[in-house]
Length: 259
Image 1 (tube, helix red, strand yellow):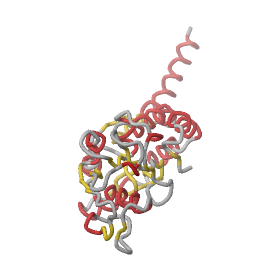
Image 2: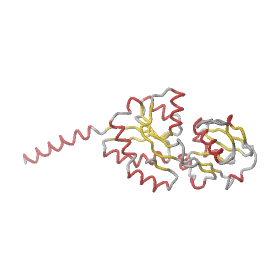
Image 3: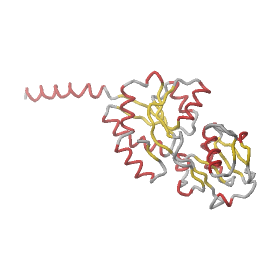
Image 4: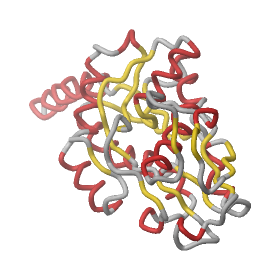
């Protein structure tokens, strides 16, 4: 009996430090694939001592503010050009620590089966933030629908359009509202995470971005935290074979892994 009690005490003593190491990591995401992927990351991270708490935001602005203010430990929702723009505009001390996935942007329509059917003067909605709006304009240029000023980089604006043969009316709306705008416009450029959350199928896009360029999404943390052990554990958990297999099975090519 004494030996049993001694063994129980020893086992309890061994297990307590492991429980104490279980660290809360609040990760900000947008609804849809980002949130779904983090759910797949969660049990893998738990084995590394991380208690992932997924916090969803309905727009692209608040997750960086929440990270900067300490309401989150990390976020996973944005590509590098967007993060760079946010840091330049708002002075955030935030850094990317790993690339994650790419969501090729698509142009969708409830009125037309192809972009050729969009009439002259048709209305096209694009996100109103500089990086995603610029991304949409670059997509339209890549498909030969508009021409932009030379050397505009990754953040062109509507003012940079130099040729517009179809006289498309470009309407800027909040990125999260682009799916809803489809009721009022001929077509809309929609980020894949918002498209899938709204029930749109990436395979139904009438124009689709090529899976290239700088638009791979990232995990971001505060600069002061970037070298902490939990960050490496979070990255390893995300970029694991199990999560890669989940993404490939779940999204059937609509979401592309970077590893």
